Length: 111
Image (cartoon, rainbow, N blue to C red):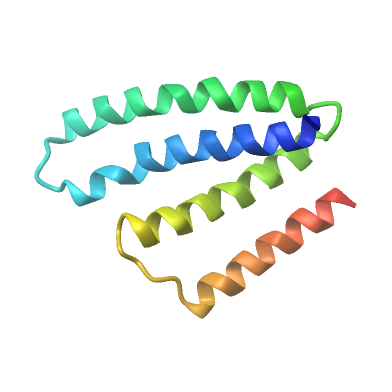
């Protein structure tokens, strides 16, 4: 597999875990904050297990800056999908415009 494709897949998985850890509890407002924190930490552990290898694999093929910008674009993409399907938040034209600017940032840093 192409190393950059592997990095992107690892980052997508990493961000999926982190998004659930950070925002999954919002539908469970009755849960105690300490349980939410503990569960979030447990969910976040696989995020770290994917993020670190992604950065180690990608560095050398990409700069650290490129890795970070790509990670941020993936993070926003994963969040928009999560917010739509899990939280029921419909993206607006402003969401699309913001995403277009992030994609432009990725293109700019990749050149």
